[in-house]
Amino acid sequence: MEIHPIAYFESPLKTKFGIPRQSGLAPMLTGRIVFEPPYRKAEAVRGMEDFDYLWLVWGFSANSDAKKSLTVRPPRLGGNRRLGVFATRSPFRPNNLGLSCVRLDHIAFDAEAGPVIHVLGADLMDRTPIYDIKPYVAYADAHPDARSGFVDETVWEPLSVELPQSLASKVPADSVEVLKSVLAQDPRPRYHDDPERVYGMPFLDLDIRFKVEKSVLKIVEIIKK
Image (cartoon, rainbow, N blue to C red; front, side):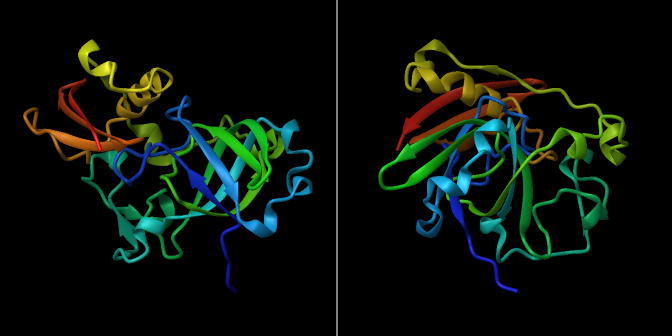
């Protein structure tokens, strides 16, 4: 069976680095789903506005050539323990398919692009191919008492983000809190712990440079590309 993208995702996050490790962790992060020409019809999304959340089936396009393994090191465990790939949400999967639950913000209709779906909290990078969209239905999809394996064994707290006012002015006003919510998820590999190391993360048309010491992330430079 061959599958082809029905749409592509548009995000302020242009590379894998900085993408939240799960959907919903950065609930203010905005994104748009733009359909491919065959699906740019209003009837394709008829009734969608009655749902609060959507499931997205998409492709790990930046990992297409990455080496695959039957075991992986989940970041939640600090990269120190191997588990079976099918017992994790690792992006390094046999068929490179991802599944995310995102909040539907609104649907805008464009004369050329047709219905454009605006969502919040997605863990997809810019230009990610989307293969299918399905509505989230609480009666079947919600299991609040379910066990969560190794996730239940670990405690993780977001970082405190410091953005000096002199640098905040370089970020669009409506994106400041979005940027901070993404950085609070700690984009670094979990085994990195050098307080002097400067990391760079593309965001919109900016290069965000930051350091992390203990539980505080400090933005030290913002460069416009």
